[in-house]
Length: 143
Image (cartoon, rainbow, N blue to C red; front, side, top):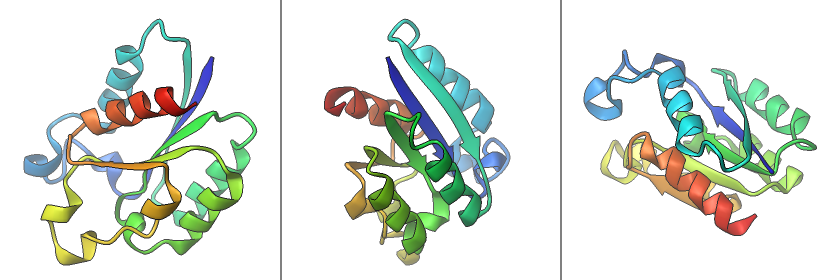
């Protein structure tokens, strides 16, 4: 059994309403339900979180560290400057996959740098909602 913590950061609660040309029409809840149903029968247990607060995301990772086998983390814009989240990933030592639905390398210049990339096992970007599934498939290989 794998316990997968799926953490979504700032503004991802607005998926389906914001920048539809980049993120699509599905809500975060719809994408998370799709992810869970995509691996039905593989004995995965999920906990889904979303917060617009950096501190709350850190608290979630710390509080769930005993439960989680792996983390799918879409920290949103926090990926580009949150050394605190990077330090948390290092401290809890749970295999973490950085997720971005859009290709951050093809967007604004400030989005091209990720300060969490080097502490994550892998960074998966640019596949829309399938970025989450690709991240989960990678966790299946390494856990």
